[in-house]
Length: 463
Image 1 (cartoon, rainbow, N blue to C red):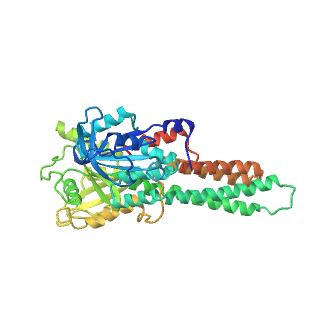
Image 2: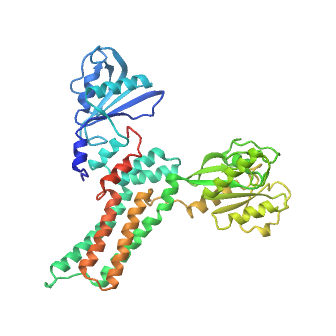
């Protein structure tokens, strides 16, 4: 399916160029071109090792040679060149790729020569945007490209790859196809009201709408897991000084990231690291012990701890199991009530002094010996995901996707209300059409221009 508007069709007559590997020094740097003149522009600068031009390159084959300055003939860099013909390319346009040395100077000079020859620098995400506009990808797959690049865990990568393979789009299009079939039946009933033809009964229509709404609500519910796998969560370790917060951070990371001493108030700032917990990229933050203090530096650390606590998705409240509860402990326990929190009783390697009967659900650990850490990791994963990651089901991952699915669910709910109120087939068709359009917006079949622009602007240049 071709998704282009007239404005976009005009823009795609250009040939674009960009560096597709990260800027800075590296072993290799790849410059991509896409558009009608991609091969011609690259070949105009390329010379084989013997100095001859390459007239008719075989697609998908790499050729060794040099990029030479068109006026002086000087060698800019030693490169490999490959060309791709439409539609067998990432963008479904003619493309070329130049693999050069990964230093900023040769890459910048090659890009400059290509632009002087007629290319223009690509906008962020323009290569993938062209792939979408030419129908190679739908919007869910385009978003999955970005999610694949940014994946921080294996579970997140697997979820992105399922969407990239088209599994999410197939599920959505299946629902939309059922809606279209239902609309066709309603249209037949409207157009041939006086004819003796078989039509769906009200009960059959109601059952199908209810089933479609349930399937859409199930899709919406998948967003929580999809969002966690894509964007992660923030877990803040809180507690009074010397309960073992920094020791817990170090134990979970498997390295001495935070300074640990017996002196209260050692941690003066928020220390943040990333951890894979059950497939969720967890931003784990160690905070200054929350307590009243006259020390100006420690007071600023406590203020930062308070900010982190307010923004956290999960609280990890650490208590010292070798000492009775203090007033500071009780104050923090009160603040954790009503929040997603895990109560951690540390120092299980020492004699127990805290009254466990006062605490309720908790996890016993020893940050020093590592005892209880697997159970803590599992408790965090269970709290975030509500169980295991849905290994095979496609997941909604972005707020755009969730908003479109919610719009479809609202339209289906309105269709149920219209049916209960005895509304006409025409009114029911309006509701079902709105639901079908919302599902179409999910895949990009009915996406607005500004939505497309905003989505691809989040990509890096060269992708």
